[in-house]
View (tube, rainbow, N blue to C red):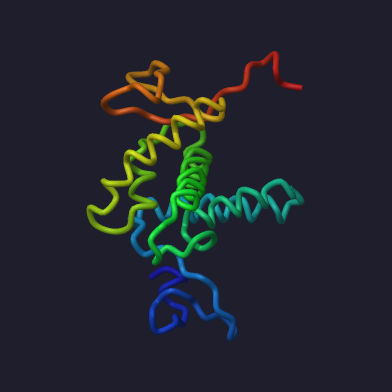
Amino acid sequence: MSNEDAVERTEDGRYLVISGRKWRASDPGIPPKLRQELVDELMNARREIGRGDEEARARVHEAKLALGERGQPWWEEAREDKLDERIRAAIFTLLRKRQGSSICPSDVARIVGGGGERWRPRMERVRQVAASLAADGAIRVTQKGHDVDAHNVRGPVRLQLARMDPREQD
């Protein structure tokens, strides 16, 4: 049983009640394995803050967005801009958690899409956000290990953090 399961919840299950204060619960539609990866990255970022890394606060915020604990409430129909924000957060949180490995866009769609098969309609939007991030140079979209134009590729792809050119490092 996770800590979240052991605490009091509001009747609708949307909030946890801790010491009399309500906190938004994580999206229950996130598959358990993916949820755990997001929570692990959230906790890693919190530990970094504890060690004095104030920049880790942005990682905490992104992980909480990906989990549905911040941003537009997960139980409401997502506005496109807010859905894009959560997709971006899920992409970066998973990529940081998997440290150097690639991720599948379907994992991101499963995070933001809700339970069951409701994630499938989110795939096109996830691919569009990934294409935008790739165009900005933040991530790479690959197919069979080769960079591809995310706007025009068909078939399965993987997402990776963009590697900085050593000449650009300070």
